[in-house]
Image 1 (cartoon, rainbow, N blue to C red):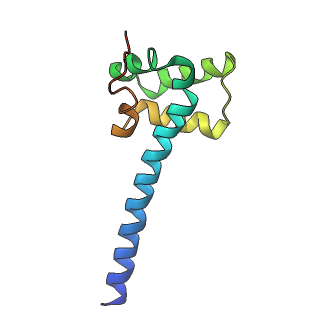
Image 2: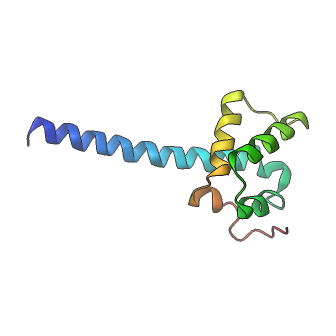
Length: 100
């Protein structure tokens, strides 16, 4: 196997691992920081509406004012995860009794 092919396969492996890691990070961050207080009743309808990053940034900052505890980096990551939720984040709402 050529060294270029080994390098390419290594990069592909690392890239796929980092995507899985990010998806896992998003779902655990949302589960730990959001659904603990809202029990998905408020979170899931908002995810279904497809709010953009500006609206999520406002919501996340508002929750911090109400006492939610997260770092500035976690705040940025929450906004990213909520404004563009993947199947892992949406799975938090699967089977929940969320009401609009």
